[in-house]
Amino acid sequence: MMDTNEYYFLKSFLKPKSLSKVLSMRDWTSYLGRDAKLALNKFEKEGVLQSANTQEVVTATYSAPNLKKISQNLNLPTSGKKSVLVRRILEVAPNYFNGNSLEHGFLVCSCEGAKKIEAKGKIIKNEMFAAIELSVNEALNRNFEGAFEPVRKYQLSLPFPSGLGVDWSNFGGSREVFIINNILDDWPLILSEIQPDLKPLVRQGAISMFLWGLKLDDELRKKLASNGTHLDPDGVCRMMLFFAQNKFRIFDAKLKSQELDMPYIMKTLRFEGDFCSACEKHRVGDYSLSEVPEIPLADCRCKGGCTISLSEALDIKKITTM
Image (cartoon, rainbow, N blue to C red; front, side, top):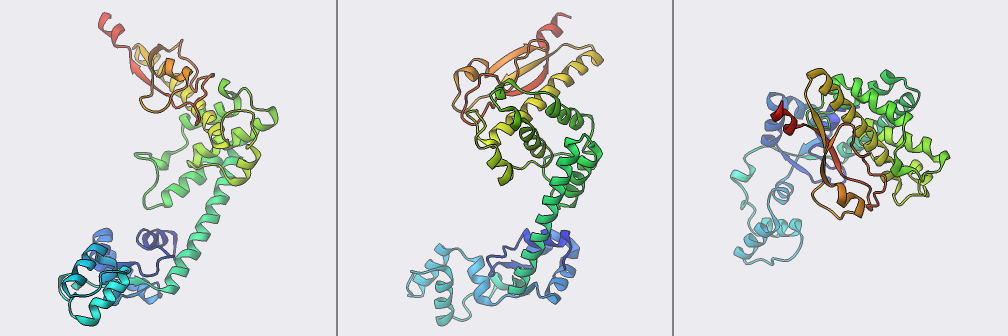
């Protein structure tokens, strides 16, 4: 069975449902560098990849308009799918595509290869679901290291981890602990209509979103379908998460202001979209750290929830008078 890195390596180019996906040696080499040929040889021996024939290569590398133009020049019908056009062209001009377009080695995903990729994908998916369940449960019990470790392990196993500039090897510091504690201990006014028995589920969903960046699973979504607010289940949990994240931003700004002895303010900002009347009042504004409105806004009635952003900034007015 292929390992996780090999799976993502193949999946980045191959689509198991499309067995005629053609790859050029040049493309693979530019992606992998010097190890491309070794990898290709390995996958060929395992039956994941096989040499592609001329028809497969041409179908994959030529656009439909290009093929129709060639067909027209050869006095052939220009109707039909790409594969049909290629077959017609090769029937009357077998050597038409010989040359630059076929100068590199081409490979295609085998039927067996597609099955192997799909099988490995299912294993990875199941492992991820188990890791999500474990980490969320650990977070709910405030076992923070147990909550963060599965996230670190998963992200570091990916060829391209999610989150621009996130240092996943050190994920789980004071910021993350603060946000989870806030989700567990506090409650936003925008969700004041939530029934008490649903609050633990909202906290669970918000933590899952925070740790894994995913939408709610179907089971949790069903349980939160009738939640007493104008928001859908994902929106409810997202507001809980935004509330905790903004609490940290305010806390962090206050800490910097004390440590650096510099005046900080909080800015609210939102440029586009349909605003409810509450968001219209606060969509652009500067607030002292002691007077920042609770974000998400308590009386926001935007369909998808409050999307006003909150960010820290130095109070330029005070700095210029210091």
